[in-house]
Length: 357
Ligand code: UD1
Image (cartoon, rainbow, N blue to C red; front, side, top):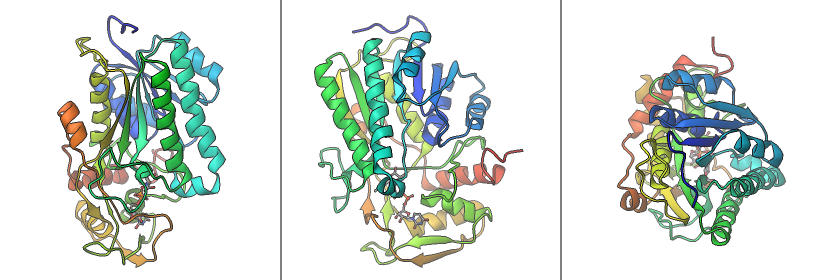
């Protein structure tokens, strides 16, 4: 097993300018890690990188703008810096789009993961945290969902994440020194409480929270609530929303669990692949979320119940007990925190990063 750098560990964050990536960079900088970002800005703004540094009060060690399928460019990053661990977020993530252009999803999401593992192996980098998704569980599943539930992904996005987990499992078998953690996030929402960093989707938002925020700030007229006839308490679909800062904190703790910590006193890394849910265990319906956004912004959010969205499932709620047992870790932020923080960012940046003054 390779030894870690004697001093401050250097973590490569792929997709570091994206929503979860940027919040994770802040968390790592604030805890003393050296952070190198790789991003191609295909779905993120360079402004996010400036905001990371302002929020954390520390500079990123380096930023490399590249497409991760370019193995040679990626290898150059590993030659330039002595990387101790990788947190791999860079991926395409829109479920609907993945049905239209599946090959792009397999090429980018699976291709980049394969390139990354090749380069990590060549450079003896043996610690990886992978950004996975609860969407791999699919529909008609028990609630809450634990990690033993078999994967039944229902769209190319979810299948690409499931394939990546299998690529990781096979690679761990062939490369016994590799320690990998796949974190299956439920529905990350919210923003950094500092108000500089948040979710800034390009075009019309696919996801409910950024859409509701754009309605609240007056950019859009009303939210369409997809489906009022689900077999739930109020007829709308239920999800496990998790604050993005809790997700970011989960990645920092994941690195500690892999033995990568700034005080260099971390426990030895376990090898092989471990898969863990990151969720709160609390289910929230779309109407409950709409009400919470209304409380945060001080007025009701105009909305209308319309037909179901194709491919949506009734209820997805995590059983978070495995991560609690493994790390002694749990989420600490509530739905009202998620809405208050998202609203602070939305008010300060009504048109997103690129239109910022
Ligand atoms: C999906 C993926 C998830 C992925 C996430 C981010 C699945 C099962 N889940 O989550 O893995 O990480 O996207 O890309 O594929 N809704 C409305 N109005 C809207 C938008 C959404 O009512 O304008 C409803 C949806 O019908 C759903 C809930 O809000 O019931 C949450 O939707 P969304 O935020 O899009 O996330 P998921 O589809 O749950």
